[in-house]
Image (cartoon, rainbow, N blue to C red; front, side, top):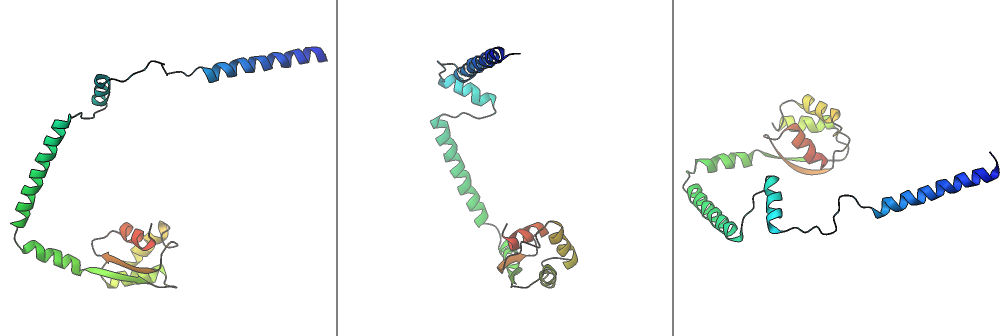
Length: 161
């Protein structure tokens, strides 16, 4: 192949790339120029995708009935016996303040939590912290914990993650 043929071939490729590039950038598939959305087509689209369509009147009526239901629930809650208040007081009494200081190991933290009856087994909690990578992210500070929390919840609180 001589120089002249090579130049002609390269020029042909250049022209083809320009033609394809122009067609690619000027032709936008899926867009129609006169596309308009009216109320009925929007409503059909929303209902087809499992949405509920309400008018303003229906919406205000729904809000009013919801407010009435909430007022009725408040009245029922006020009539409940004082027995539940004692249960809530017991729950609030079992909150433990954990203070993590510089130099504390995950094992020491776990043993403090076990002594305070926040967790059942210090070894299990220590293993959980190591296994899921929380032991390297422990933050210094004071944290409120209770005995109803899972290992994951406790770990997220003391690592602030």
